[in-house]
Length: 196
Image (tube, rainbow, N blue to C red; front, side):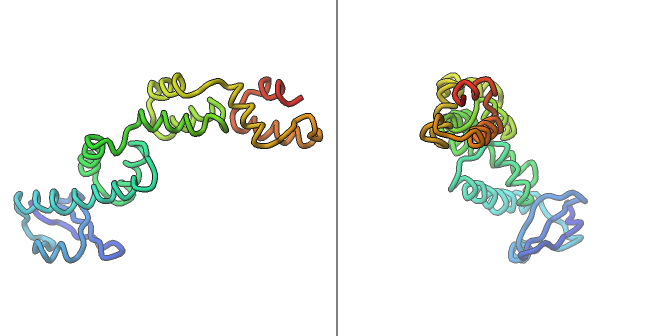
């Protein structure tokens, strides 16, 4: 294997191309430690050492840092790791690691998402948001089955957050509230049932 290109990036990072294919990002100190330079040969043992002890370790640390403050879906984590210049192979290994340790779980994510948003968003809006986040339809349906009471409860709670007494609202305020609820994905006939 031959290092065919070392591409300088910002913050002292360098993209390493081996046999004209991008493999990983390293820092200048890593290049020095492993005596890597353009047109130099790299042995399989050195490659595996770099991959396992430097690249994969850093990618796992990056994933854990991403997950530290907020739960993510698998798709969201993959996107973040791609932004950090990790290859599909590295990302696949990291996803396996975080799944094995239950740091990500799309089924759990769907249940929590529905549980905490069911009082302020329509079923349709929650469903669309979860699909965009890469959650499979079966997991969404299961989460709705166990967590979502009814569309009527959700709309009543959403109205309650915006107005104490609907009957005391002006026609303009009712129109604004109706539009707001409609944008959240509630059905118009259901909105009109509670805003008269």
